[in-house]
Image (cartoon, one colour):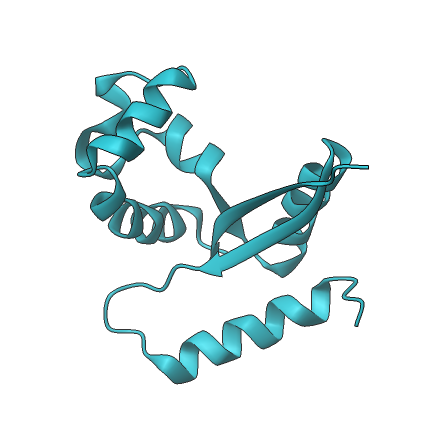
Length: 116
């Protein structure tokens, strides 16, 4: 049986406006890459979705936002849709460093039903 995998970015932040801003900062570099915008165009997004770090629709579809439980729910949605493996990448805000990255991965790991 072929198991699909997917990956996604995560912003752990309970303030939705701040989380979207962090996600936009993170997505900006990807939205400058023709291969990435080409893929997103084929997925139904338009040039308007790529402006200013991404539209709300794009940000919310491509980045899991919220607390660890909200992110866990998004990951479960991928599994229910057929993904056998879901890779997550925490997108930090500018100025956050390695200690914050580790803290957020630990927080997220506690919310996930991880198996060895």
